[in-house]
Image 1: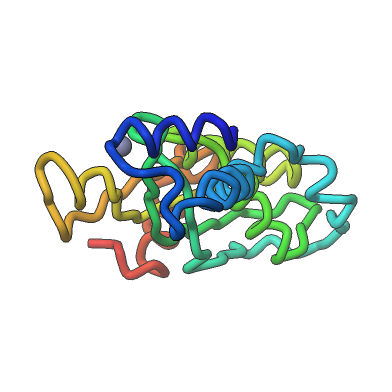
Image 2: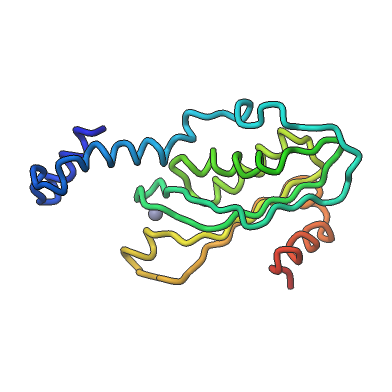
Length: 182
Ligand SMILES: [Zn+2]
């Protein structure tokens, strides 16, 4: 990867031997590996059995999980917030694990819609919940820095599974807790 970054730097017309750039291919390769480390992770390792029996059946909601991902069309970052809710049916999951699930899927090449759906399906799979809802609000650098240069547009995507999909009351409750309801 280091060699390829050196080639890219040369292709854009830079001097790869310039002092500030000598170690850039190595650093860039390391950064790229970090930003895509989600490919080396899997759901079982992330959860590591942190799912517990519980009688709770009220909605569990985790708001404002920081999200850093990279768009698969331009290899540019999109950054924002992820909100996750689920309706337990006998099992709850450690809260920090939800953030780690978000991170695992975010640290891959993504489109926001797919990322949203993958997080929702993973939480459903792990908790066997009655319903799972995921909303992501993000700004895409590929929109902000190039092309249309829409600097302030935020893209919002959602994935509603189970009771959140079927039942508009559950959905409204979740959205109003996010201050996104009507
Ligand atoms: Zn893009």
